Length: 499
Image 1 (cartoon, helix red, strand yellow):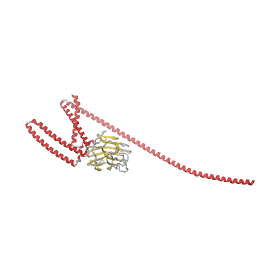
Image 2 (cartoon, helix red, strand yellow; image 1 turned 90 degrees about the vertical axis):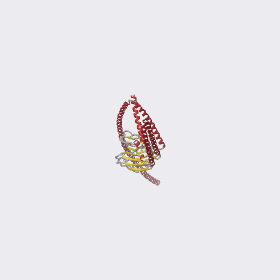
Image 3 (cartoon, one colour; image 1 turned 90 degrees about the horizontal axis):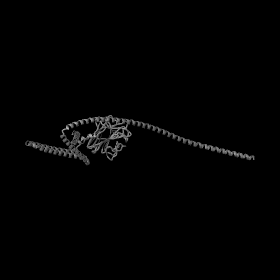
Image 4 (cartoon, one colour; image 1 turned 45 degrees about the vertical axis):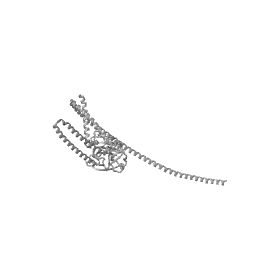
């Protein structure tokens, strides 16, 4: 029996914890405090190897105090995307980041996303082109030659509009402002406030705690259930893009429409009237109970049961009205398919809670029947202490492993920097050698051209001189022939005289 109860008690405590947590979450949701989910999207240092509810993409790395989207290396892409969809109609996002690099000009930059799709690698700051949603670009490289970088730019895509990388998105930009965000002494802070269909961007470049206005966009329609994310890219120039902190705050509860406010006031008045009627009924029931207790104590239990049943029915009606009002509010901002999905999820949660309640009731009955449960509780406490000790040891080992991982990552990054520097030196020497070869080839070409021109000149001169010699020789031959003819004629005359 002790073995059965010792193996059964941890399950009982686990189910009890799950039931209490589910009950707390349901009551927290019904209270209307939508800030319950802001921690799902927010993160900040220190980082212990991973970020809950976020996924890494491509070359992104998690360091001890930041998330490195890209290192100071050529041709890198990295991203960080949330796993959960946004449930806030209006929100405020605060981003802390650093962009550092050794070169005079910046690399491509990074982007903050609020889109329907996630983890889609592409050419727009490491994300896909023709995206559907909001893109805020922190552009540090001047592609169009306007000499206005770095700046912060806003674009909203519908899945068809294409971002033009060569003109820095000027044709699709909704607005931009200059922003000295590269190689700052302290992390840069940027706030994005989406409230009443208006998007405001505030900046703090020197960590002064004072945010200044960057730009304001009106008539901005950002849907629910999109994903938050970051991405960055480097090309031939390199920069390190690091996200240090991201905080998300819900602003929906501060923006209630007049009609909604009127409906809430009416519901509050109805609830107050119902509470007054309930208090009157309770007073009447108490008076009846006191009179009946004087007559007969046996009637007390049925009256109490009726009173509790009446109170429960009234509370159920009030909760139903609250739920109906909440559903009406959600219908204004959600589609029918999204509402059906949420209702199915709630039905599944209710079934799971009912199952936990049945199991817990069974366990309570066993606990009441078994007199040896105190020993089991002692054993459970001992096991919990041992589990806590083991957890602490595992956490310490994990911390050591993460430190070792950070060291290895730093060594790899250092080695990569050294290799990149060597490659850069080799490329510089190769460029110098190529320039020398080009100069030698150019000089050879010049010599060849000069030789050709000289040979042509010599050939022309030779032609001129050879033709002159020919005519001189021809004239000399003609002179000899004339002299020979004269000599022959004279000899003929002399012969004729002698004869």
